[in-house]
Image (cartoon, rainbow, N blue to C red):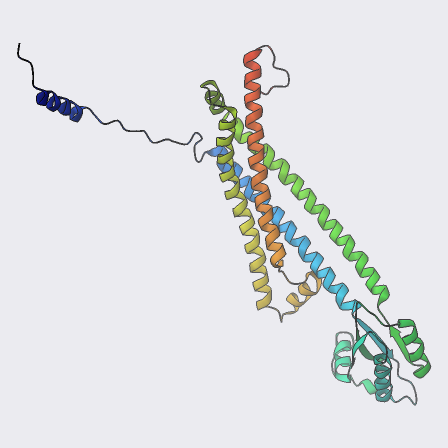
Length: 337
């Protein structure tokens, strides 16, 4: 029997290696399907609740800023009213009242409301074409004051009364106090509504997440039975629901931000119309500002984190229930089926 040469052995080994099929690694697929009915339903629920929460947050922000603007506008001005009287030189009295007010520390400027501006103020009630000289209409002096260092109103009122008996000073303190009270009440009501919306959002997201996970309970059981660690299973579910929650909350928050941007744009384009002027006077500008948009973004992140945390806690609880049933099959109290 002839012995094969080493070169022939090497050639045969090379030929066998060439004939042997190459081993290929199968591509790994995600443990959870990227999209299913439960995931899509959860995404829709998250989008709706995020939209409502962001709308409420923007509304509260608008009310707070509008109330602060009202308070600031009223508190930084005082009004001197001079009633017409026989023998009174109205123009001289107006200038004298303005000069007296400007002598006090804490006043910035004084403006006499002329006859044309006074007629425009009375036009909604008395109509146009008024002749103020034929009517006993008081004239006004508007004085701008320093809000942080207001003047002595009592001393100013007393000096005006001694110099011009027909003059009265209105510092708007009563209106400011009422407005501050109304603003605080409105903000408290808005904050309460915001908390209710967030509570409803939390409960809705929690139950929707648990419902979506209940449809994938068999996946958790299979992974746990084949030896997968609890942390691994929880992390996989956490990643899956994080993607769903980010998509849903981004859609809802984006629609809310788009709503405020569109409302502000339409308001700026129709600012001269009576309807827009009345809406602006009541609600202010439909703009939430930088802080408002930051709050919308923060709401989106909070919803995503909440959903992710709920998914992780639910998976860990499911694995605990599986282990409990395996150790004691008769124990079913307090364990979801």
